[in-house]
Length: 230
Picture 1: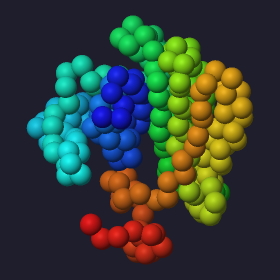
Picture 2: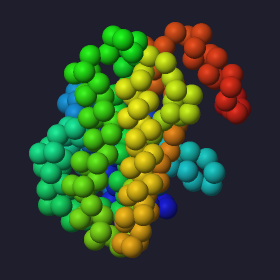
Picture 3: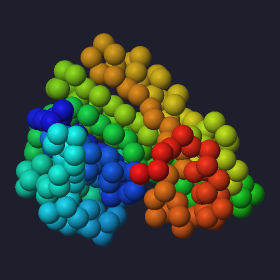
Picture 4: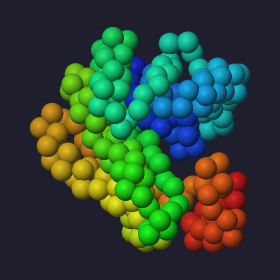
């Protein structure tokens, strides 16, 4: 149990990548605050994790399955693009835990829209969630991370920043901004023994991605990956 007695906040926790991160931390003994702005999806995550097959725990190299313990999962609805919502999230976590060891800024929105059809309202919404979100959540949670003395902040960017994926100009721009945010924040917080890193996952086989992209596109992406059949 590598993360026993560690307190972890994960935004976008009810999504494909977010739920996988949530399950993994729980399986490693962490206490997790799952944050999402979708009530139904968040409730479903809690129900799934409360089942006997909620998450896998490795014993002797083989997975065993277990439901999450009652005090291990804290589910909070919050909008990462809202300053007041992020402050409320921080207040709830402070009241429950008093400190945070790890923050995973994972929440995102990734519509596919040709550049000339992107409205300013859509541009602002995508940038608000993908770039403003990590800033607002980090700013609100930082005092709790400082308490831990060994804080870790992980920002989920995107592999699309390297290819410049067409029809996602707003998303790619925001995710590229996350890299600059990560670099600057790492320098700013190093003195507090807090590390800040970014991960840039490629297109991932989650329900929203399957709904957005044609099967041929997903197959082509899979062929380019260094993967082994399970």
